[in-house]
Image (cartoon, rainbow, N blue to C red; front, side, top):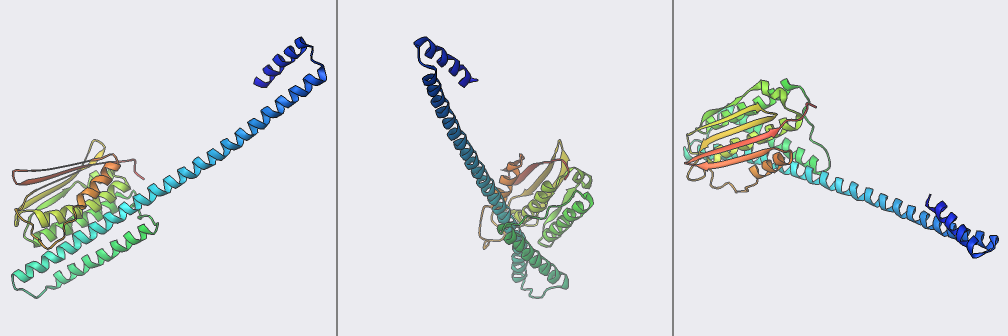
Length: 277
């Protein structure tokens, strides 16, 4: 539309000026030629810029995906090493303190199981760093509940053997609301909570963990007494366990709150639930 308007205006001005038709036509042709050459160059530049933007978006997407996998790998390694090896170290410390150097068949079996779980999770972490995905749990709530219940049973039994008393309450029905990523985070977070109780809670004290569903989110609450000193002084302090979980939960739109008052540690996590996958 713009070239047509310009053409009419130019023809009128040429006519008023008495410019010969052939000369007017030549000038208009040159004008149109220059105009469309400019448009063609502009279209080419726009196409090139669009392709550049697409490549930059793909690179950013790949970088974010790499960072996500690296974060998941770090959580996997930390959870497994911290939970399983901490329990093994504390059990051995307890044996040495009591000058008891024999192991029951059950203790050997449990230590073997924790070592194998550690190797499995380290391998999963290595696969993550090589670009593979964590095999997400399906929407089968029965399978998810069984896995989480197994983690709970193992955690409660391990703490009981270390002299603690307490329990973990789980409303199995509440897991029907959870999606795969939420279930993965719960399965990953629980061992970290048990490890923190074993290392930082007051010896032979009580603890309580509860997992429920409320207002579109899975809620995890933990309460225990705080020890004046760590029960495993040789354990290197990483200060990464809860931090990594907090960052992941917050990235999903959730929230984590902790408090330490009057010798009591309280932990509260709210993990948003998406539509079942």
